[in-house]
Image 1 (cartoon, one colour):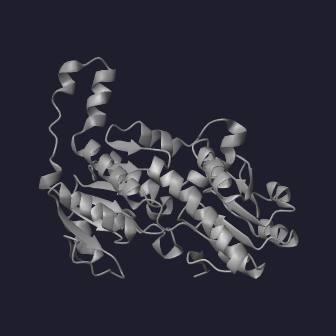
Image 2 (cartoon, rainbow, N blue to C red):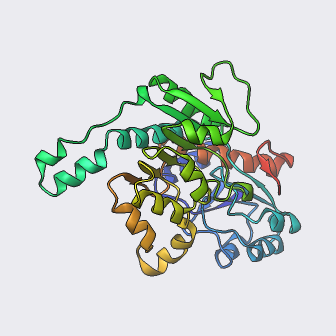
Length: 331
């Protein structure tokens, strides 16, 4: 089979070439993203494999269908940036990788939490200002003494629950469709109760339209004034302006943001400007009680290898038997 790969990162390419050598299938690897222009490169290929958080347009799917390509697999979980209805209308079938390494993201959420609880950003800011004495004065909190609220108890959420409980924290969880798992040491509660009780609120839910701004001004007002908000899921879950207001007015203790609300828009202009330009991002990044990272919670050796190999294997299943277990459909 001939497969064209888009959006390849440097750390993914060795796993791609290894997969090609092992399976005997042909890969043409591009670091450019898939869009209305680069889709033309796919002429003569059997399927497409891609990773990007920027939009997949209806025009692109129309061109893809015109090229006779019917299958696309993505090397990540989220599909909120894909017009699935347009894909279906053009006969394009899509599969994702729903579980490449839940531990990678769960561990990152715990890492951000520990960083904020021990106030390391504030310590680093004082040290950067050559104020050694002031850097010794920040009283931290122990995770074992906190109540952690995990919103979304899917694969990643359940991994996070186990890790937080392993540190000795009391864990609350909210999920509209809770999975009964006797190994999970948590108490399921309603969302408002979780907001009110939790010292740390950790988000692991999809970025579907129903979850857009699930954390806004009203929800932030229900939280403890020293609560920490962690988002390694999707940027649209949090109203960024409301978050910024809460942080600037000491209505929230801190935030760990790996998925930024306007990430896609800024990435689309990054190629032209050469930098990530966003005044709100800059204001958040300047706050010592905010951990702001560029969508890297997933980025471990294990996760990257699984993302590459699983997604390519799913594409081969599509092409050879006409189906794969991770196919996604419009909601």
